[in-house]
Image (tube, rainbow, N blue to C red; front, side, top):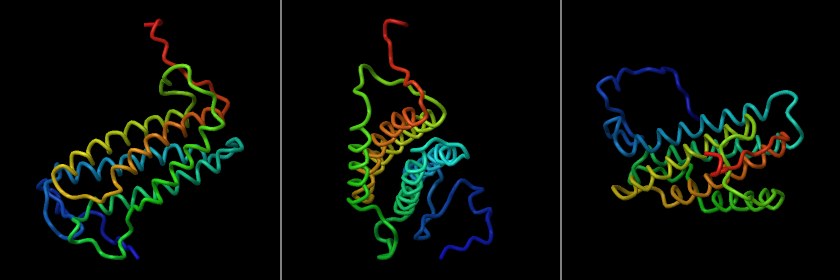
Length: 194
C-alpha cells in the first residue's frame, strides 16, 4: 500500500531526483524525461475521461471512460517500470505484459469496424472529447519517441515501446469513436484549402 505523508522533500531543489532504487539522477535525464512524459499522457487522458464521465454524457461514453481509466492504470505501471532500473525491480512490481498491448489491438479492431472509412487525414478536433484524445495521442507519440531514445541508452521493459505505439493508434481510433458518440463531425485535411 502506498502512503504519502509528505509531498515536498526539497531533495530536488538542486536539479536531481531519485529513482525507485535510490539512485540520484539529473531531472533532465532521458529516463526522467520519458516517465515524466508518460505522466503528462496520463493527465491528458484524464481530461478526456473526466469529460466522458460528466452528467448528461451520451450513451456510449461510459464504456470509453472505463477503458481510459484502465489505460491510466497501465500507464502508471509503465511509469513505475521506467522509474526503476531493471536490477532494482521487485518481482511483485506491476509491469506491462503483452496482454496489455493485445487488449488495445482488440479494442482498436472493434471500434474501427463501426467507423466510416477515411477519405483523408483527420485533423485534431471533432468535439471536446475527441480533441482531448487527439492531444493525448500526440503526447503518446512523444512518450514513444522518448522510450525509443532511452532504450538505445539503457535497458527498459520490453513492452514499453510496443504498448505506447499501440496506445497512440488506439487514441486515434478512440477520438474518431468519441466524435461519433457525441454526434460531432470529424474535420478532415483538405490540402486544396490552404
